[in-house]
Image 1 (cartoon, rainbow, N blue to C red):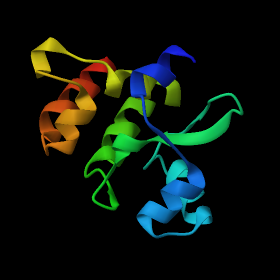
Image 2 (image 1 turned 135 degrees about the vertical axis):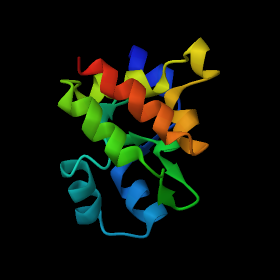
Image 3 (image 1 turned 30 degrees about the horizontal axis):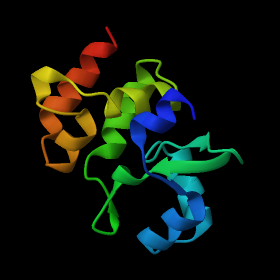
Length: 117
């Protein structure tokens, strides 16, 4: 298991993401293309999957897309930005993904923007 796989913990294959969001698999691919979601090939079979924490109550975590776009614009690959979102930060009292799930998007977005400089 790679470092990013163990860092994230729970991954959802794209068909599961479609089911949880109640959308088509084509829509899930569109969400990835639009940078609303980030996906990696994980596991023994290298199945394209999304961190389970990106979905909350049947929806994408609010403000996830904007944060992914900011990180991608800073030159982060999908793997890099997933590592950043799931790495604990003492000054945040947790991980950036947890802060986003709690609705603390301004703080996370500001931190993500500083990475571009």
